[in-house]
Image (tube, rainbow, N blue to C red; front, side, top):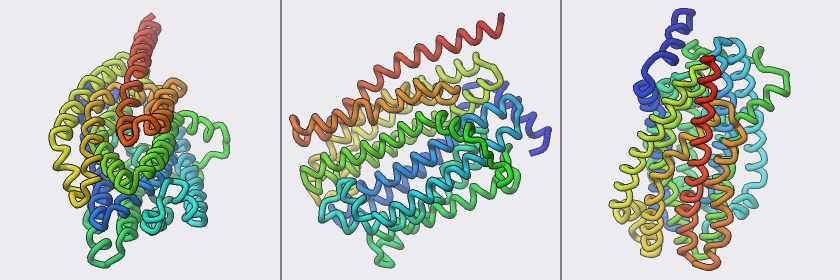
Length: 456
């Protein structure tokens, strides 16, 4: 980008009406999140046609995917939040150093994960809750997920960089292209070529490679405000520590999501493969519905961080209120549709197994009852993280899938059986919402204080 383009971008981020700016940035991020969730759901859909145990395997390996996402999103959002504020303060070279260093960190950590995962794959699958009947399918699926780990992780990082600087459209192109390819390749690899469960993982790894190449091209061709290069990789440990600390809320959210997924699989496995398959399917549908709010929130994040760096605290407050209200409405409408259509949604995956239907329908409906509460939770968490408030953001991130969910999933099934497995996530969502209200009020008050101090 030349100087005029940079100045035009700065004016857009700090002067354009907040509602239209957030909405404009949110459209490509929602599409990206939806496409990612759809191709993850497509994996479950196509693999489920192979049987209940195969469907359960997708839920097992989803924990691995959550770990890969945890690394990518922690570094991507941590470095992205920092570089966005640096761009807002017109420190472009510092932003490029942060971006290059974060990319290098993600590459090293993801390679280590790929090596460890490949060497200890069978033991890891059992640890994640695979039963003996699910294990062969899970191992086959995990093989290619581990091989594709570095490109997946670095794709998440680059996508978050583009979102952070307000260029989510480019990120959408990369993620959408890979997602569509994944959906096309799934039935081809699984059924036509006869690769079975492994075919779904091959399709995912190959599509992620395509996304990686497209996203990297935007940085190499100068479409980004930052420059990724080896010479800009920092040797200062303090920068990497700052990236990780800033990304801690995401690490807590994504890391605990992985642990929660394992705990859920282990709890469900005590009631048979049908319970594991049902919760796996419901989890993917829930993720698909929630991806709308995540996408909308990620349209809000660059507006919050950029304007915070430019000391436009009034715009941060306005963007926060707008995103919370509109996000809650979006989630309420989405939840209502899923609640009504629950029998048909579950049947579309695996109507041949009555046990999966019996568990899946009430589980999906109960989760949808709590879905509208995620609007305020999401915007509060993202607002705190985008403005550098890592500690409260981390606590709130830990609440939904950690502080509340893990104890609930360990305790409720002991007293309520299958109902306890179904009820753990909705109960956690309700408790997390109450905590989010407290942080939201404190965040808005702090923004008002900063605005007053700036005026004095």
